[in-house]
Image (cartoon, rainbow, N blue to C red; front, top):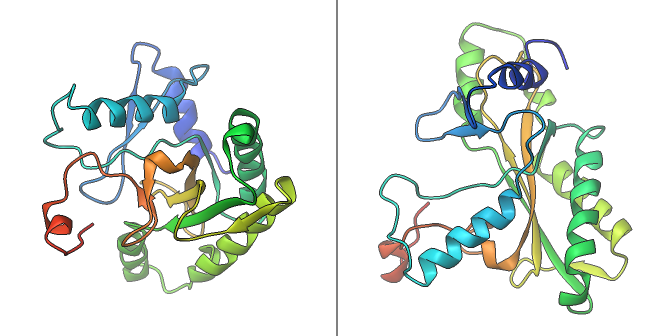
Length: 219
């Protein structure tokens, strides 16, 4: 990627040796993206699993300012060249750790969220008459690419949107400073304990959704 893209952000993160975490500027309010320094790759999924278990068992108090944590295991430019590589790596790792825990056939789902990207597109459109919409990976294309990779790695797998045993989640990251026409995504492969399927596939919330309890849903 160009020096002003994600590689530049990673390079800046590497240079901040005095910090355990770096805050990356995003273009939407309400979202925070933290990056670990180069050379540090903590098990973010395991960390989230411990947090969820602690909250469910009431060993920890519910967070006041954090509704949901998306544990990014890898990032890439969202296109048909780079996405397969990172998805293949993460699905292989997940299957090595969980193959004996899964049923037959293996049920999975794919989630694709571009929260915050619409705002970026609107801002870019005001000062740019060029149409970059084609550069943003279409949702159906993303689903097809990811599903094909999973089925190639796990031949006895099927898509099940109601009761998946694991999910491949892709979150488009509205990172400030990314050149027009490029879209960067965070990718994770999560066990069923860390996501929900209704009203749509997403990472499990850390707080109690009172509206959902009353028969309503909120995001």
